[in-house]
Image (tube, rainbow, N blue to C red):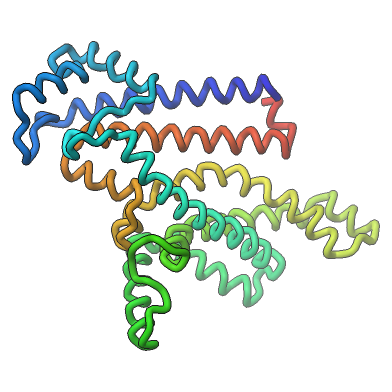
Length: 310
């Protein structure tokens, strides 16, 4: 197991290096001066920034300075927000995105397993038809549309009741988190429902399930110990990327619901051409995605030892 873990970690480091390199090249292909902004920069500040990031040197020298800073965990200083480190932006606002993403993952994971198992048990019957219709809607409708409709529905509901049942936007309490987390996890829950349904239908017709039935085991034990346990393995496989995708993909939801998460700052950095924030958050999000994939692979190795042989 240690050899398998070391192999996956090495592959993860290579992947993060590739992401960092691709980000560096992409940002240097963008036209314009990274130090040009609405606020005038004094010659002294400009000289200090050029020296720190090697902007007065060749592209190759800048690249090695960039990698050296990343190796030390230094993402640099924002070119737009005065005297603010990119590390501080990530440290202050990523926990908000992570909290929102964690709630969305819980909703998506539990809902996907529950609804997927239910549709498999009631295959081609009314519950299966209704749930699969809703699943198709959940996959097809973009998150920004669902977010806007949900916010409009909250406004109408609060107006009808005459009280604020759930906040329309903002952050700070559990009530603020409920609707955004549901919206954020909806498409992932729909995907996991389809995956769980397909996996359950394969397991139902497998030899070991027929053997369990022939032995006269109770249906509940067959369902929980044999069908559900084996059918959930593909869901575990995609759960790591799904967690990272939800946590790092809530840009639109954070903007619509005015949530002070890291995604909102990333969008602002793109609009303001804040190069260091863009590069720092991109590498951070990429490394987080890689870490989650590796973590799930290792967990999957414990659940199913056969994958360690690959």
